[in-house]
Amino acid sequence: MKKIGFVVIFLILIFSIENYQSFGHGLSSETLPSVKVGNTEVSLFAQIIPNPFMEGKQLGIELFETTTSIPTQETTYFIKAVKNDKIIFEHSFQRNNIGLVIHLIPKDSGETFVEETSDVSKLESLYGIDKVVKVTSPVFSENGLYLFEIKILTIGSFQNKLQDPITYNFGLSFPDIKNLELEDKKFGNHELLVISYYDQINDFSYDTENGVFNFAMPFDWSTETINQTIAVHEEFIFPKNFEFLMSANFSAYLNDLKLDDRILTVDDYSSNDHRIVHLVINQNDLLQLYSKQKENTKKMEFILVPTSSEQTKSIEFLIPQWIKNNAKWWSDEKISDNDFSKGIEFLIKEGILTIPETKSGESTGKGIPSWVKNNAGWWSDGLIDDNSFIQGVQFLIKEGIIIV
Image (cartoon, rainbow, N blue to C red; front, side):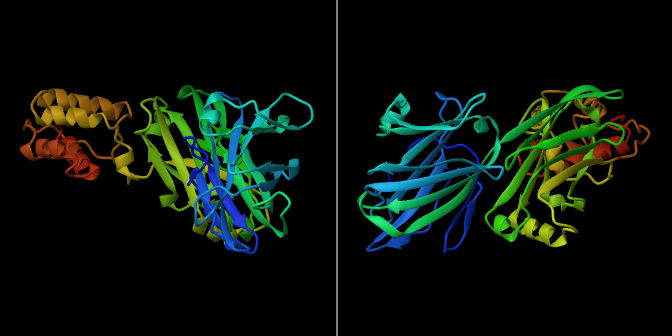
């Protein structure tokens, strides 16, 4: 199919089609089921288009014939864009044999301005785009959730007005990032981040005494909204030199309801310098939370609480990948037993390697058993899991070989 040919980026994309089944998507694009118009079946394709040569956001929309995968001829699109319950713009556009590209450009102040122009980028012209829509508005300086309604007014001929226009409603969420400069008497100064892939973040704060993080964002708690939402994805990002957060597990709450532990994932792999805590709440989870709401509300209030449970939650996420290199060198006898044990001691003391609490034993003077070294080699090759490697480390602590 001749879709708008740009590389796509991650977004939260939710669709519904009037009088048909609702659909949703958490990736970068969505193709809606076919709708019969006369003797022709058509579908709508939409995506976010990244463009490094322009400021702002960019949206691509295309109606195509399902049997031929060719964009429809002489199509009239009526677009309505809404942010925070306020209409940004309403306008109709005509296209023939090609999709509709809309630039959403921020400005400091003033009214929203809509224009069609042939001033296209070289990248756009490569894909046969000879005309774009540029919408300039102060609203587009904001991230979060934007709602769009698209009505198809004509297909096949600009004079062929549909008696019952096809209506699509969808939401695009542009990631919103908030940072917090933390001054902690015990743990020093750190910059903390939260990223919302659903809507705009409000009231991001950290309670230094209790170690509790809070933030809120708008959310319409209704079955209609939830049925169009595949997932709500939020991220907390902390520096790894923030020791308190490197040695802790976490619990998460939403509107005072505790979230299931499977919703929360700790990621130490994606960044050398930062730990990322993901909260991914799927549609079924949202429906269950909705049924437990004590009162009607139009927002989500998140709380993230570090815990000190003895049971390490998802150990595989608490071991930096590069430690496997050390284990491999040790198993291949490129570093000595003493160097390896001293290295593990250092990693544990610095909070870089997190293991379940283990009582240290007195040294027996015995060397490291061969099975521990074998385990380290197998673990570095991916033949056994993280827990098996950690059990070997715990054995060395209990035997007094590693002093913590």
